Amino acid sequence: MTTAEFRRMALSLPQTVESAHMEHPDFRVGGKIFATLGYPDKNYGMVILPPEEQERFVQTYPKVFAPAKGAWGKRGSTSIRLEAIDKAMLERALEIAWRKRAPKKLL
Image (cartoon, rainbow, N blue to C red):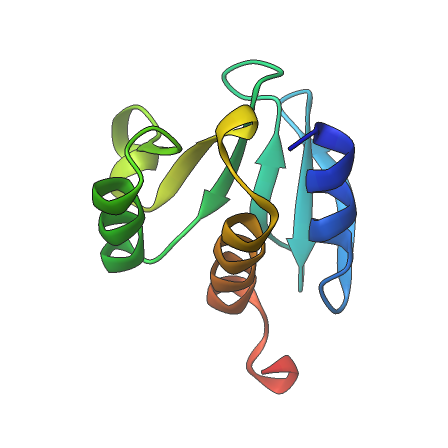
């Protein structure tokens, strides 16, 4: 997976816009961030998952997903190793993150 593919897939979700936060590209729906690129470095993306989904992804695919460090990770921020994830898995993670943050009228 490349950063360009991650970006394209994130932007394909309804009413998603790209912005920036702390000098990293981020993806928002309804003004809320659900994914970012480039943290902790260019080899990673991040999605904000419900805690139970984060736990499931991390336990099932520990070489792909890891909780972000500190309080952000405890609240669902989940790092993704781009070189280790496939398209279907990323689509699923992005969709879950998007649904968590999307306004109810979009769901």
